[in-house]
Image 1: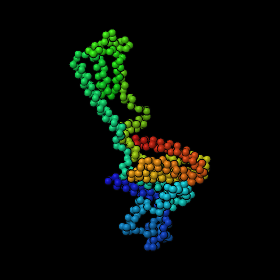
Image 2: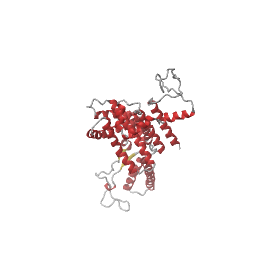
Image 3: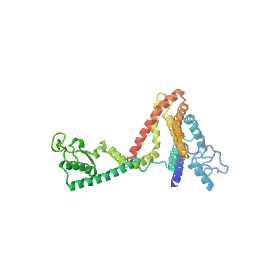
Image 4: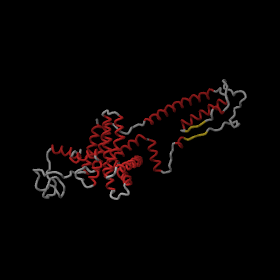
Length: 385
C-alpha cells in the first residue's frame, strides 16, 4: 500500500517540477472581483495578470480554491496539457514544428513535459512493483552450488584422512590418496584448484590394490618421483585488474554486490534521465549537418518531445500489461509504435519527403542504440561512485 502512495507522491512531484518550468500561458480574462492594482507590486492591472510582476490579479482565500490550485498546479491538468497531448501522440511532427516556429504559450514546453512523464513513469513502475531485483537468480544458484560443493569437499577430505589414518594402503594408493587430498584442501582452504595427473597416466592397480604385473609405479616420463601438481589461483582468474585504480574499484563493486549496483543503476536512471537529451542532440544534428536552416535548438525540441512520447508509451504499456492485456499485444505495440511515431515526427517536423524521412529513420535507429549504450555506461560509472 505504501508503494501506491509513494507512486502518487512521485507523480505529484513531477508535476511540481513541470509546473515550475511551465507556468500559465496567460490566456485568461480578468476576474470580476479582482482589485484595481496588483497586491504584490501595486501596479495598475490591465488584465488577469500583472504585466509588471506576473502575479494573478485575483487571489484566492478559500479551501476550495486551494484544492483547485493543488490539482491545477501539481498534476498540471490545464488547457495547455490537453492541447499538447493529442498532438504529441498523433501529430508529433506538427507539434514540434509549431513549437519551434513560436507557438510556445499554447503548448506545454518539451522540458516540462519530459520531466512530468519521467516522474510519472517511475511512479507507475513503483506502484506496479517493476523494480531492480534484490537478489539475482544466477547469484542464488552460484551460492547454492558453492555451498553444495564445499560440503561435499569437506566430507571427502574427512574420508581421505580416515583412509590414511587406518593404514593398509600400498605406496601407490597412498600417493593417489595424498594427491587427491591435496587438491581438496587447496580448493577449500586457499581458494586454489590443484590439478592432478589423469588416473590413466599412472600404473593400473589390481583388485587388491597392488601394482599390476608387468607395470612399474613410475610417472609417464620414467621418473620414480611423481610430478608436482599444477596450481591455478582462482584469484588471478577473477581479478580482472585493468591497471586503472578507479576503474578497478568500480569493477570490484559491481562484482561484489551486483544487486545493490542494479538498484543504484535504476535510481540513477531516474535522476539522470535528462542526460539522454544532450547525448542525443549531436546524433540528430548529423542527419541534417548539411542543412543550415535547422539549428541545434530545433533538434533539442525534437529529441525532448520524442523522449516524452516514448516515456508515456512505456507507462501505457506497463499499465496494459498489469491489466491483463495479452503479452503479444504489448510486445507488438512496443516494437511497431516507436518507429512509426519517429517517422511521422521526422517527416513533418523537418518537412521531409517520404524517402528522406525513411532513410533518416534507419540511420537514427542505429544512433538510438549508440545513445542507449553511452547512457548505460554513464549510469554504470555513476553507480560505482
